Length: 620
Image 1 (cartoon, rainbow, N blue to C red):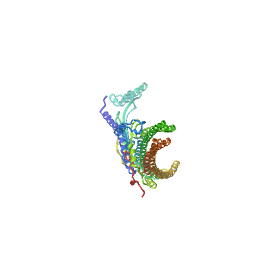
Image 2 (image 1 turned 180 degrees about the vertical axis):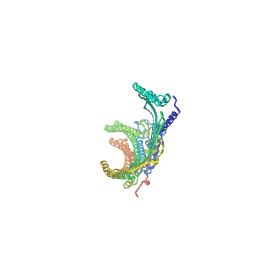
Image 3 (image 1 turned 90 degrees about the vertical axis):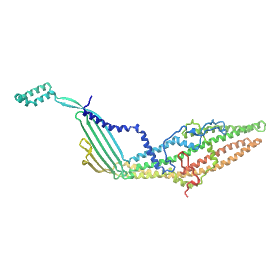
Image 4 (image 1 turned 30 degrees about the vertical axis):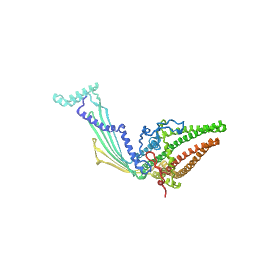
């Protein structure tokens, strides 16, 4: 099938029109834009977070939700070379296990913990919502295009061949009359007779033909919409349409229209305070989310440290219990020899034997609890419970040898610092301001709607010059749009809710301040109690050690009683465990105290910045 040159040019032009409309659509497919969209979102969100980081002390400016899980991280850590014989025979063979320090545990936790990652993603999503709220006040472009290839049919009625021949005969009557000298009336009478015969035979009926038409059409529209801070909304749009017939008589139609509209509220919805309310709240919500995440990082670090030290404490309980059990075993053997020699009563041997069995059960329970807590801690670190690891005993040794770092600050000064530094309290205060602002916006909604509206439109000249807009024939209008809002129940309810919301926010602010005071004072008392508990536990260990030495000496002389030996050794085990608990308890209480004051700052890797006495904030 060959096309005539005119039809070929027409189809080529139609193809170009279709290509111009379809290529932008094809280039914008999700498969091509996914990576670019993610990069753009990250760039905008991280920019917002860096922008607001300066308003939140302790927030990491290099925040990112990217999570790199290096499965070989434990391979680089030092390994256990020998099992600790002081832990007894109930422990597993730990040789070759990686040893995780507190610093490394914190780094693992902030890198791999699932809940921590979820909190980071929540912050990201809050900032992502802000990008959309900001976008509402950017020039928003829109565009749309459509194209189609059409086939249509229409009926064309034409004369029959008989009628066409008869018509041609009638038109040639004057020439026949002159040529044959036959009267024209006779010739016309003959034509009438033939026509009547044809009508009787049905030869004069018109014929209907189906005509097949092909065409291509397209439409494009582009526009821009802008919301101004004062409430005005401006919209400009350009629409163009095209139609080309490819068969029959080639013809085409094209037209364009340029329109512009503006709406400016004068009462309800007027003013930047009302128009920018959603954006203002979105901006503040990101700030609140930053504070919440920063506070969560503090809580998370304290929790990880507490769990880490508690596991070391469990390990120390195993050590103390095993040491006491060994002492009981020696006492039983010694007492058994005295009974055999008749120097002691069997009842005393039974008492010691019963204490030995109780301590063996206590040792078994201590080992079980240790491994259970260790498996739970592995989940905190984002590791599988099948992972073999051991926490570093040197961390507990460092706590003991370093002594207590007890802050020198009064509870009153601590409360004053907390009232200024606590991030959650700042959120509660700002929430009260938000409620007050929303009430003012609700008051504006009580006004009737009165808008100043205007518009203008320009169309193209003729039906082919789509790119020639005739501004001399521009049409414009201006007026007002009034809505008295007779149905005001929803508005009334919203306003009343805003009033209640403000009162509730004020109460929440007051309650938050009281809870901060209560929490700081409780933390200060807990820290003081932890210091006293450490002093008591230290003295108790010294006394218990001397009692055990005394009872061992008396036992060798055959002068000790079973009850005194049991009590002395049990008291030593308890006092040793109490001392370990006191050292750890004071460390955790100190971190909790700084956190409750709002001055515990966390580094990127999860470690905290130690607050020294000279660095502790005061109100002097």
